[in-house]
Image 1 (tube, rainbow, N blue to C red):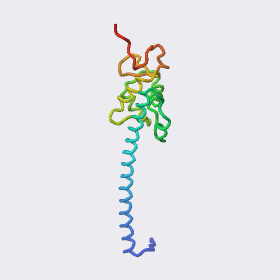
Image 2 (cartoon, rainbow, N blue to C red):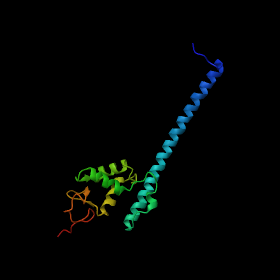
Image 3 (tube, one colour):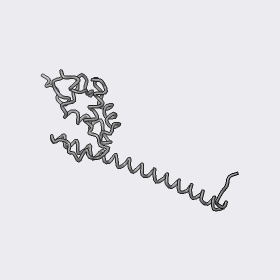
Image 4 (cartoon, helix red, strand yellow):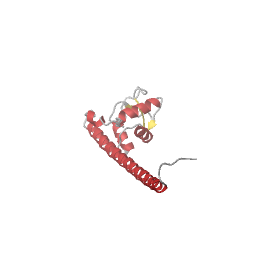
Length: 154
C-alpha cells in the first residue's frame, strides 16, 4: 500500500499544474531551438559573406570572422574532407554539403556556389580532370593551374 502525504484534491491539482508547466517548458524549449537555428543560419550567412569579401579583396579572413565558437573556415573543412577522400576529386555540391555538415559557414541560399567561388581563388584546390570536381594540389602536384584558372584556348 502506497502512502500519500497530499490530500487527493491537492494532489490532482498539483499533477495538472505539473502537466501544464511541462507542456509550457516543452513549448519554450522548441521556441529556443527554432530561434537558435535561425540565429545560427543568420550568423553563418554573415560569416560566409565576410569571408567571401575578404577573399575577393585578397585579404586573409579576419580573426573575428572565425571567432564564433561554432564557426569553421569552409576552406579548412573542404581540405579535411578532400584529404579523407584519399586524393580523389569530389563534386563541389557534394563537398559543400560535407563542409556544412562539419560546421563550415556558407550562405544558406547558395552554399555550393559560395564554396565553388572560394575554392577558385585558393591555390590549394585544383580541378584535375572534370569541371565542377575539385581535389587538393597536394594530391595532384602535376596540375599546373589552380582551379579558377583555365588554359587559354588557341
